Image (tube, rainbow, N blue to C red; front, side, top):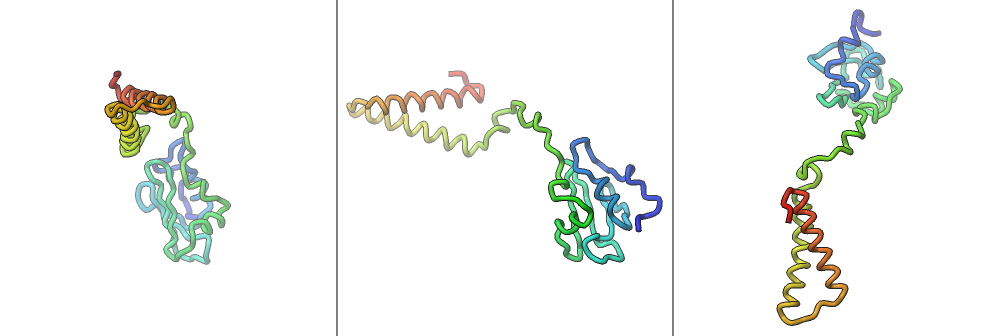
Length: 162
């Protein structure tokens, strides 16, 4: 039995255009009660529930969190209302993922430092070979040029134009 007078449109909380569909979930649950901003309690549709044991929460990014305190798996709760797990998560705006970001947002700093260290090692080994009078093989010269190019590229990405 649905809660009398429950306004599912008013209950949207912080749903955005790309957020998951909280309205669809709430409209398929019984005895829905608002339990704070972006929070609801309802009867779990996955078991014979007479009093609300299902907590629903919508996060700021539009993700829907579902917890049955009796222990029903979330996938069973969703299946009982004709939904799937992917519907609990906001739809991704792919255009936002294609936009250029600052260097720190593009890479993990530890990975960048590891790559720079590897290229610096190539340069150091070549320098040591030249210092001891060895002639670099053509393949070694190519690898040295590639290392130098990668190091310049990394510097350019962070605004150090060398």
